Length: 479
Ligand code: ADQ
Image (cartoon, rainbow, N blue to C red; front, side):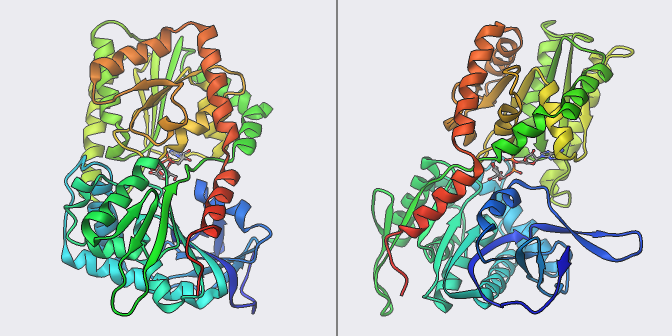
């Protein structure tokens, strides 16, 4: 239910993220309705927004003119307009074809375009202005992710009274890779407009601190960065540390315990021909996720005769993503070719080696897939956290299943008791997959139980509170 009534126009708590937490859905009568988007960030912020007087600044998802601000489920939503050309330059270009590759170890080369940078700056300015419009005096502002790295500085320039935090959902690259960015200094200065910067791993925070030393001549001590005084501005100290994100463990566990989801899990297995071993991959179709490496290892295991149909099958869910960016188009073709080859060679009539699903599913279906899978393959080459690993563990209240987890995910730092792999090492990956399949049940249950303790301990509300407590205690007090 949304209303567009006159409301108090400034707020003590403001979130800024590239996307608003809602999607426009056209009803049968042609009217547009706003539905909450399914993403994890939305759930996370929900628990924080509840009981606070909160506004959310973000793009509504359609190019051009933005809808008027409106209220939705106790949140004030303030849409920021982004033109079709800006989507191409700021979002698909600078965010996803320049920053994303650099921040993920240059798995594909980054592309540098000055027009993209100009659009990025312009859109960040627009976001900053919107934030200033809705932020009450002394408000807390929480900026999210790599698309909005200039917003902290741009807000601070206009509003020294507010407290600003930024959280990076993706990795922060080593200095040697960050160095490639022609705009490295303004990006760092943009972030240092915040009072507190949160990262997924300690290594990410350290990479940031080092970059400030190298490219801004900042002095650093532990997790603190102090900028030299310039142009009559006093020195400022900003803290950068790790606050690993999580999921809503309780609600997902409850969903996975429900009769309908458990039944659906059995149905899924049955419709796959009740294989002895069901392997599962769930990812956005992104080159960071290591889907190609995973398929390579899987194919070789068939070649070696270690796996065969109908005993084994792999369900690979690959959510459509960034489909207009070339690197993603190429990846899709590669993956679909590989899946076709594996199936052509190793499937039998009635038993398929790889079930490839280029689709999105609702939470209940995802939970059923997790419950159905004997082995979950999470093999990214680089990933900020990877929530899929945590979701799988949260769903396995039966202590069944086994998690194969890449050491290049943020999740590895909490879930090191999983079957750990280096996805670049195909031989090692094959061995790890086989250990996860053939490992003794009691050992696997013990592993799952240990993983569940870690995931339950740090849920998403704890993450948000941890971030806000760090922001509250940040070294500088607002003016
Ligand atoms: P993502 O790269 O999108 O997130 P991830 O953390 O795995 O990666 O989150 C994906 C989410 O989408 C999960 O909640 C998953 O259940 C859901 N999902 C995936 N495929 C789906 C499908 N086919 N249908 C429905 N839902 C699907 C970025 C960073 C990560 C970081 C998160 C959060 O890249 O490293 O963990 O932000 O900070």
